[in-house]
Length: 75
Image (cartoon, rainbow, N blue to C red; front, side):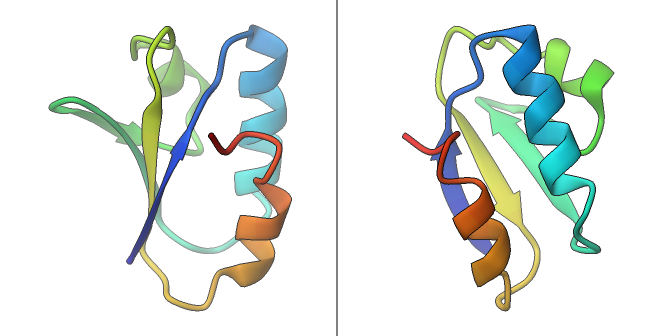
């Protein structure tokens, strides 16, 4: 499992983020404090407090291409 901090501030960023992560077969969650949602769910992401950094947890060790695609969202 890999975990990276990300920042999503605007609705357009959330849509772009979901478009990127949906292309990959890995299971992914977003964690904000004790709240965890599916990283591929737009509605789930909007239920989080987006004013603070969020942790993306990817349940795969072979996800270098995904990490490269997410550089725009990483803190």
